[in-house]
Amino acid sequence: MDSNKYLSSLEYFLNKMQSSDDTFTNEVQDAIKDLCEILRIGAVKTMFQSNSIEFRYATLTDNTAVYIIFPLKGQPEWSVEEKNRIKSICDMLFIFNGRTRMIELSKKLAFYDPEFKVYNLKYFHRFLASLIREDKIFGYYAVNFNLKQLNMINNRIGRNNCTKIMQRYIDLINSKLSEEEALCRLGGDNFAAIIKTENFPVVSKIFLGVNIDAPDICGESVRMSSSVGLYKISEQPKYAITSSEIMDRIHIAMQKAKRSAKAQIIEFDQELFEMQKRASAINAAFDDAIANEEFIVNYQPKVSLKGYTISGAEALCRWIHNEKVVPPGLFIPILEQSNDICKLDFYMLRKVCSDLRRWIDAGIKPVRISVNLSRMHLKNPLLVTQVCSIVDKYELPHDLIELELTETINPVEFKELQKAINGLRQNGFATSVDDFGTGYSSLNLIKEIPWNVLKLDKSLLPACGSENVWQDRILFKYIVAMAKEMGLECVAEGVETMEQLQLLSENNCEMAQGFFFDKPMNVKDFEDKLRDRVYTI
Ligand code: C2E
Ligand code: MG
Ligand code: MG
Image 1 (spheres, helix red, strand yellow):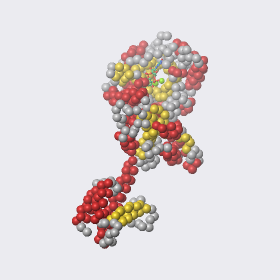
Image 2: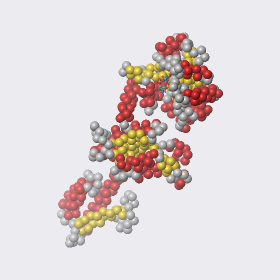
Image 3: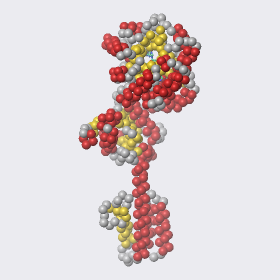
Image 4: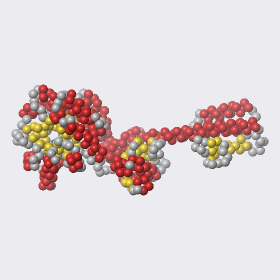
C-alpha cells in the first residue's frame, strides 16, 4: 500500500470534513472515495441504533453509532495496519458526525422557544425571508395573535396550570399546520404564524375560541381564544416586502383587535397603513415637539350654576405643528401606545402649575385646574411622588390641582387606579372620574375609590331631537342623585344648550362645562375670563 498516497488522501478527506457542516455533503463523499480505493473498501454504512449489542461508539444522546465497513469483493483480507487505518477513519467519521449533530442541536436551541417547544422569532424571520426569496409568500396569511383573558384564567386556576392550558391551545393550533406553515412564540402570550390561505378557516375557529379539555390539569375545561391581527399576502406588492414589514403590519392589526370590544380578528388594510404612517410620523416628531414647546394648554372653564361663575377649568392639550393646530384626538391615542403620553401629561401639569403661579403672583385669584392623566400612568409606582414634586416646585397648594382619570374595567388596573387615587387624595389633590357613562361605568368604581368629582360624559345629556329624551332624563337624574348621595361633586360635560342647562339645575348638578359657556381657549383669553369670572345668561 502506498503510504504517501494514503496520507495525502487522508489529509484531503479531513480538510473536506473540516470545511463542511455535514459528513454527507457531495464533497466529503467524493473525498472518502479515494480513501476507500486505497484501503480497498467497497462501502461504508453508518447506522444509529438504540440498545444495540454491537456498540462501537456511544453518542451524546445515549444511542450507538455503528460503522460497518465492507471490503471490496475478491480482495485479500486487510492487514493489521490497514485495519488500524480503517479504524482511524471510523474514529474521525464518528467525531465529525458528532459535530454535525451538535450543530443541528445548537441550531434547534437557537430557533426554538424552550418553554413552548415552538419556533422563536429568529426562526420566523428566517422562514418568512425564505418564502419571500423563493417567491412563495403569496397566498399566505401572516398572523399575530395574543391569548385573551389570561389574567383571569391565571387567577382562577393558577399560573402553572394556565401555562399548561396555553401549551395545549398552542399545540392544537400547531397540529393544524403543515410543513409549509410555521408558528412561533414572540414572548409571553404573544405568538405569530404564517398560514396558507386555504387552511386559515380551520385555524381561525381555534382563534375565535375553543374549549381546552383539562380534567387532569384543573378538573375542568378552559375556554381559550385570541385577539388576532391578520395580513393577507395575496397580491404582488409594488415593492419587495420584507419580513419586518410583515411583522409590523400584523402587530398593528393585532393591537387594534386587542383594543376592540367587538372584533377579535382584524385585517391590516390601507386605513391601518395610513394610521401606521401617521403614528410613526407623530412618534418621530414627539421628542422635538416637547423640547420646542409645541404643545400648548387650552383652558375650558367649568361654570358653577350658583351665580354662573367660573369655579374651575380643564387643561386641554393642543399641538401647534407646522403652523397648524392638531387636536388631541389625532395624537393622544397614538402617544397612549407608548410611555410618551406620560411625558406629555407631566409637561401639561408643569405648564398648568407655571400658569397658576403666574396668576397668583399677579394677584389674580386662581381656580382649581384639572389635568388629564392617561391610564398609562397607573403602572408607575412613583406617580404620586412625581405629581407632588412637580406641583411643589411651583409652591402651589395641592387643592388647586385636580387629576382626571377615565374609568376602567380591568381588575388589575382597578387596583392600580384605587392605589393612585388614594395616594393623590392623601396628598390633598382633587380627583375626578372623566367621561363617566361612556365605558362600563361600574358602580364599584365610585363606591370603592375616593373620588371628589364625577364628570358626566356628554352622551348622558339628552340631545336635541333624540327619540329617548324622557329615558335619558331619568337616567341623568338618578346618576346625579346617586353621585351626590355618595358625596361627589357633579360636573356635566358637553353642555351646549339652554335646555340641557335647565336639566342640570332641576337635578342639582352644580357644575357645567361646555360650548354653551365657552370652548377651550388659549391662556391669554382664559386669564381675561378669570379677571371677569361671571357669565351673564
Ligand atoms: P376630555 O378630557 O373628556 O375633554 C373634554 C372634551 O370635550 C374636549 O375635547 C372638549 O373640547 C370637548 N368639549 C367640551 N365641551 C364640549 C361641548 O359642549 N360639545 C362638544 N361636542 N365637545 C365639548 P378635546 O379638547 O378635543 O379633547 C379630547 C380628549 O383628549 C379629552 O377628553 C381627553 O381625553 C384628551 N386630552 C386632551 N388633553 C389631554 C392631555 O393633556 N392629556 C391626556 N392624557 N389627554 C388629553
Ligand atoms: Mg378630561
Ligand atoms: Mg371628559
